Image (cartoon, rainbow, N blue to C red; front, side):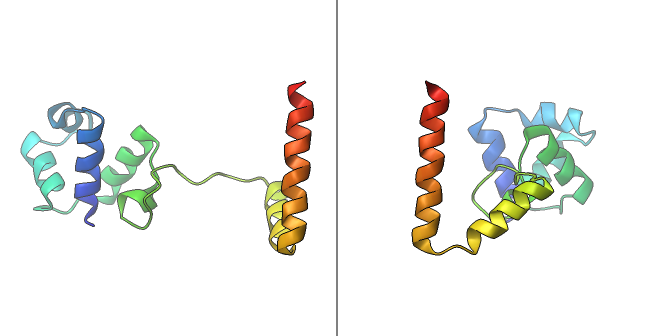
Length: 109
């Protein structure tokens, strides 16, 4: 999928106006239209601006994923926990999940 069509889908799904976006991104309305239809290639700068404005991942815009959310930024400690979790067996991971659910229930009391 061309990233212009991803942008166009996002704009349409969220009832945004190309005219307003063109003004905000400092391009002409016709250039914005050309970006959306794939007639012109979008600059990386504009793609980054669009992603930042709407909190979208670049991977989503370029079609590498269907999840529009940017990836989570994990601390070193969190990254270490994820790596340790991935090294566990399936049964061990299920025990971890059960423990987390139990702790969440305790926190809600």
